[in-house]
Image (cartoon, rainbow, N blue to C red):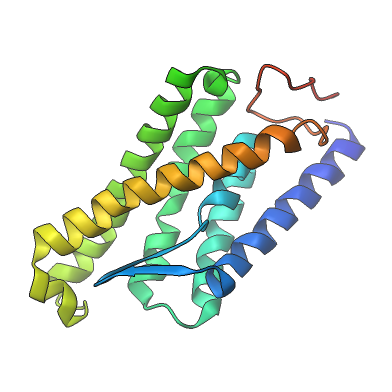
Length: 195
């Protein structure tokens, strides 16, 4: 990778990280008692996944720091955000190995659902750990494990993940035409980045 591409990649990683910090502070939150979901909180991570595994991991970690810095989220939410490292690593490696994976509707849906399932399993695992340790709000216990953790956190995360993945891809598609850095994801109309 040449110096120009290195600087561009680093700049884009920094911008995605900054957005990942700002989203938990300012984006609308959807609260389905007792769970909460922050609109577009995964978009910077997905865009980072389209670029490279290293950037995806960095943005996922910084996103969790953003949730911590916001100061309004309980530690379980911060750890849910930290668990995004898992789907970021898996997804970015899959995309790096198959640059054209998202060029078909089937590939797009398959990848989005796979990431959503991994994402949901990780978040449910974090919440389950806190739930069985009696460290959740009473709302979780009032509604029971199946409803509050499996349905709200699990299924809610799948839906939230698919929405954010679709937003990220819609942002990435025109953006890649202007950004000439090497990236893992290619769409049929993207020009090849110069190495």
